[in-house]
Length: 261
Image (cartoon, rainbow, N blue to C red; front, side, top):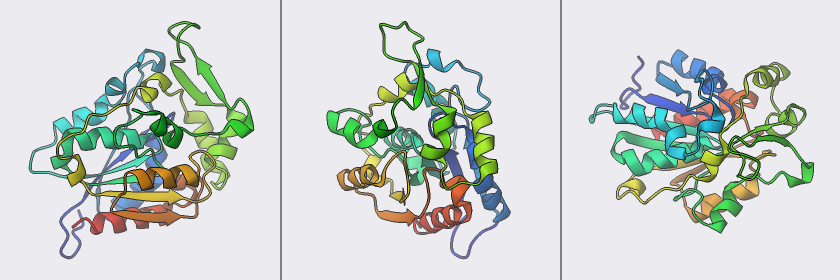
């Protein structure tokens, strides 16, 4: 593994967003491994190759269990760099509250960055995507009955490129349309975090996506203002820079990681 001058070996843990999986990081993983970095890509519950039914994942703790398990088993003398995309930001914030001493830096990529999750109306206003101008863009499932809140969600295929990948290569959007799976929306909406005593000791970096149609720049900026990170970086990309601008995203992640030393 490569060691940069004056910088120890780096271990990146890449966390996907809603309906995606570890697979969405394939370009970034390749770039990182080619550069000699250690990379772990996790599938959270009901995502990627994990076969859990999203309609049975009702709490965020259950959904985020793979990341919690990974960090719990990480030796106390090791630190990782967490990178989270979109709803993966909720996973990062949960980890910051629980495992601050094992995290070197947390990098939010077009991600939910809410100190206490969806604990207040303002959190919901700032952190939930607003795509109402497009009409009914998602398919919902009601695993607990039609009289209960929905349990899973997925963007309809005809809206996926427009909202998630409008600047991404056609082959990547085709791949995504084949691999996306419903996400446990009830678990997301229930994501609330208590203030870990060391949470603010973890440096945070936010990477804004300026042409984002899903988590619009205005919402990203509002979250940045409310819980200011130590650094804000900018990409001319859609919501999915791991597809649309992978080299630039890799460069920004590497830059942010190096700055944490």
